[in-house]
Image 1 (cartoon, rainbow, N blue to C red):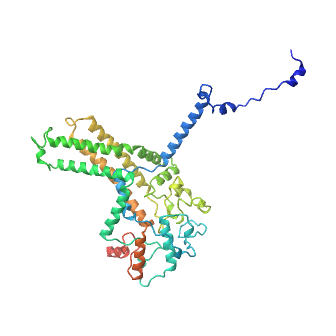
Image 2: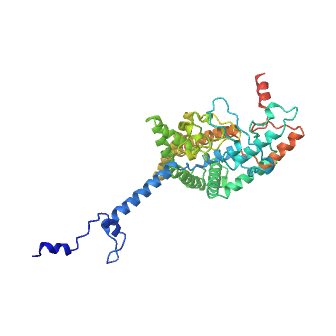
Length: 434
């Protein structure tokens, strides 16, 4: 037995460090493997983190458009995709023009138009704003042809040849993108196989009617079946491939309608920001955009008028005028039409794959193909009309060539009406009333 005095020469045990196992788990053991007990929580945490990030990315991702919806969106803006706007020149650098607030706008601190950190198309607005401050108004200029208070002017009306050239250039730039290439190939297949089916149904190939046109084993009926199956497969690409995003939008819509969650409608507004505007967004400051939301003055605006996440907010309008709020029922209609397109495609696929051409009723194929195409076309038409309306109010980018033509024609007394159609809408309205 040791004496009590011997404990003074004994080294005490070190204190227990409860964090040591976690630190030791970072090093391999003697057999080259890691500690399974310590590594399992880390792997589980990493997996759950990845799932959360993937879920958040999916919630905020833009809806991949079907063929008809994409066609509607492209048609509403294809002629506005022109060359890059004219950059701000040093000659126009002067005292910054200050936007005068409109009635109903939320009062913010005076903001110089040039100081807003918006690039690209916004630069054209800045340049036009400076030009309007230095260029006097010519005598005889009709009010409908005058620029907006910030100097913006819609591009002049193009000739048929110029419009075709701009449209072809815009389509070519879209075709060179991966999505544009796939959408174009998809559309060409739909048109080609659909056109062939239409010709077969019209008996445009009498040589295939052997022994008769309606004989089940005739080449005509065989090719009708082949065409129908190919078209069904093409429609399944969008009907089933876009189903996750369509039902996600339906989930947000039901949250807005049933649970009365305002954030759900804000999420939908961010996803469909190309054509949908929230209630109260027309009263937001005209210089407010997604790149200057972190300023102190921008924190005073109501968040209910801004999409969620806030980075999905539309760009500041080039005209200095924001489009009015979109009717919410149009969002309901578009989402439900796209969901019904998927459901009708399920019915069509079940009939085409579950029954063969000998016992499948002929009317079922035509019915579900017609209904599925109709609901998708109506949804694409709504997005096209609303997108066109928004661009007609908030403006489209103007190329340097168009800006030079506007300045040149203005000096020579040639007036271009400041609207997308370059027409005197007031005079046309008066004639219509008469």
